[in-house]
Image (cartoon, rainbow over all chains, first blue to last red; front, side):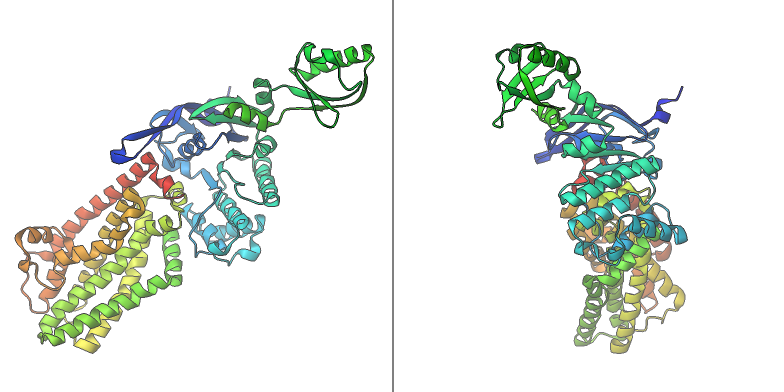
Length: 318
Length: 255
């Protein structure tokens, strides 16, 4: 049987963190209240939650940029406090709204961080050239950082975050403020990193579509606590938002539909569709159809829609 | 360490402020002090005494600023978290910056001593290569110590401590006897001066220009004190970073 360290990239238990501020640092804000988290190796894991939920704090603790007040966190089998120096070689991070030394050029930035991770000579040149090619930064390699667009800066940040070929990559809102087409490309890059290199990726995001598209597992965090954790589909089921069966019927309304077994609610829309929310679509749909047909109702059109992760987020953030 | 050397060297070659640090202020310092010595009709030995203080100020200042840039440049560009996410020790940061600082300090030293010699008859090599090298070494070590303490303060208090980068050297030089022997200082200040390594390196170098040393074994005392402060500065910077990781300042300085 494999040990947890071999299977888990992250094993955090009861992590607490508070920040002090104000006069004489007398005001204490609890950012994390006993967070436990297990992230399997080779997965893309999403941390979701409203602003100030504690996502970045948790990410920063796991990346050794912050020390926890209480609890333990093992990342790639190493303790984030005791083994921080050894751990830093094996992970990296990119943030939304990245910032690097303004007057350094694109290639110089990537090379600077490459040297910090111990690369030199031909190996450094190969890595810098490779990353610049991979992120389509070739035309900008001699452009100073402060002259780049937001999208290009984000690509530089991603290139920098891969300079040490990390086993674990933290992405803090990687598509924040990017144009939709750039976001799509960034997401494609992230998916490729896991697919081609087997990298474990932990990302925070506000964009539910991003989490739904990319993440194998997600955790919802709010006010420093993890409220739900699982695959996106698990969560949709856990929250019991139900699935929607949209029906176009003749006659357009059926009085008994709202009282049928498993039907949570029926909502007519302006286009003549009835949106019928059910607890379990696989179980309820055949029964409903049999009952409708048996009642002489003609089903002219039918669509089934699973709930969006965004609806789960709204429900949990409430 | 090489990463920091290359980065600081590139930044130094691109920033207009570096030109002022390297040329403008050192030249202004030597020229204005030199003319003051003429106006006061000081002897060649007294002129040398005063110019040595000016040269020390310029060299220590430019070198310690470079050490402080190890943190300052990343604070200004809000990228400091990436530096501390990497597997490097603080010695890589401070020694890497120091190496560039010494090159810049040596340039400043060459420039201002040449100017001092040409305009005011200051003979830098009068004591011989060894004493000059020891004096420069004392300036560079003092710069490293001050620079690392400045890094610690910035890491402890954030941007608010930035002023220390420019003010601290002037304070140290004032107490170490920039234009005067420390014997003229009031008692409490003299006691502080005796705890500053640079005081001893200035005293030793000036002794070659005909001034009696104020301390027994100034070089040895200067080196011992330097070693002590180097350990303290390193420890202070390390503790400041650990605290910044605890309080979250490391992240705040990157936002």
